[in-house]
Length: 279
Image 1: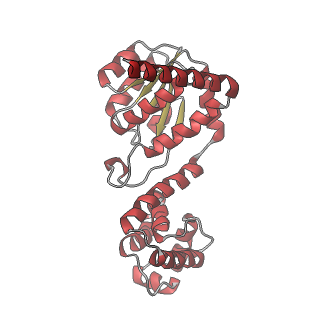
Image 2 (image 1 turned 30 degrees about the horizontal axis):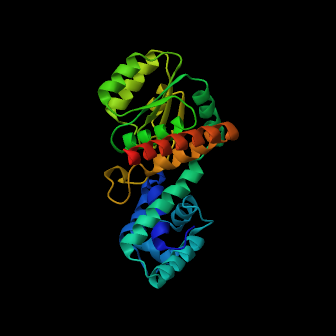
Image 3 (image 1 turned 45 degrees about the horizontal axis):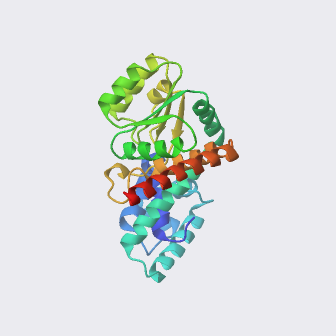
């Protein structure tokens, strides 16, 4: 676990939805009050009207062997925070990024990535759907995929989504990006494309059963509370992390060949810049 209380608290926030009501009471105590005194299991149990066994289960769900280890790391992290010169706002931003990266590592399923990779290489036409921040991630990933020789199109307009979905067939692959898994325009287009035989891959933080039934594969990404508001970091960050990981797998399926394609695109861009300079 990282050695600042901000990181430890962020880890709790990332797991918040997994907690029971009692565990949420404990998490709220640390997240909101950030206590520095009377941190014994007995004292906290009496203060929160919970059992010491509940404290132990809470600590284990946070990744510790028991509550004593949790409190030790919490106290050490408080000392580290007092010694650092970083502003609290800077620490909060960095903690959010680190917490999402740690969560991404726990979610990573390499077998699933290989399955999705096979889908990408076996379909002639690939569309990337996304709206808002997810649309920005879709456009970024589309440019990177093009440089490996894949024919891809980023679609961020709902009307174009509907039209491409209506024209989809068995040779079409759609990668839909939606952190919430509730973007109406994206889901509507995905359902239509599915009816026409398209293969659907969804990249999301949502865990709803309805999404599993709609998609052929789901790449789960990490999230944290209020991420979509962009109040601390850019909402597309978890999507970009997953896309970077997936891109590396694509690149290394035929490293020599894809490196050659990357070089060609670099040369093309360089030639374009030289032409603009001359004119």
